[in-house]
View 1 (tube, one colour):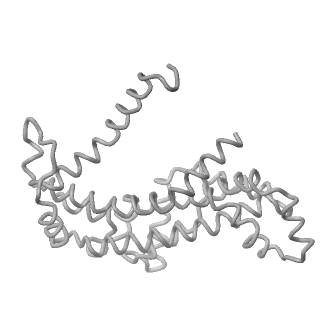
View 2 (cartoon, rainbow, N blue to C red; view 1 turned 180 degrees about the vertical axis):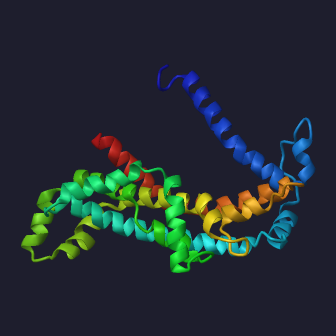
View 3 (tube, rainbow, N blue to C red; view 1 turned 90 degrees about the vertical axis):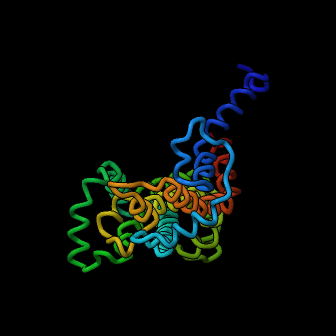
Length: 273
C-alpha cells in the first residue's frame, strides 16, 4: 500500500473511527439514562441528561467522588513530579558520571522491573501497617515516588541527547555536578521528561489494585470510587459512564498540556533512530 494512496487514507480513517468509538459511546451513555444500554438499535446521538447524571454522581452514597478526584489529583501530581525529578537525576548520573559500582547498581535497578507488581503487594501492605499508613493518602504516594522504568528511560535518553563535550564545557566554567544537571542537562531532557510525565500521571491516575488494597471506602481514589458505583444487585450504567467521563478529563488536560513535548520527544527519537 502506497503512503499517499486513497486506500491508505480510508484505512487510517477507519482505524481512527474504531479507536474513537468507545469514547463516543461513553459520552452517549453518560448523557442519557441507564436504560439506553439495553436499547436496540442503540442511540448514536448524545442526550441531555449529562448535568443531572453529574449531580447524581457527586451525590451518590458511598462513592465520595469529589474526595476521590482530589485524592487522585494529589497522588498523581506528587508521584509524577517526584518520578520525573529522580529519574532525570539518576539517568544523568548513570549516563554521564563515572563512579564505582555504577553498572552493578544499574543492573540491580533494572532487575526490579522483572518482579511482577502483584508479588510485592503483601510485603508492601505489611510495611504500610507497620507505619500506620493504612487508609492514608501517603500509602498510595510514597511507594511510587521512584520508578525503575523512568530511571532506565532517562538514562538512555541522556546518553543519546546530551553530548559529553557540553558537560565538560560546563565543568571548565566552574559548575558543580548538580548545577550541570539543573541548568544544562535538565533543559535538554524536556521532551523525554514530558513523555515520562504523561505515562507516569496516567499510570498513577488509573491505578486500581493498590488503592483498593490499602485504602477504605471513605477515602478512595477515582478508580476505587468508580468501583463503588457498581453493586452486586444493581448497576447504574449511566452513573458509571458519567464517572468514567469525568475521570478522563484530567488525563485529556495533561495530554493537551504536554502534547508538544511528547510530539517533540517522539520526533527526536525517530530522527535519531
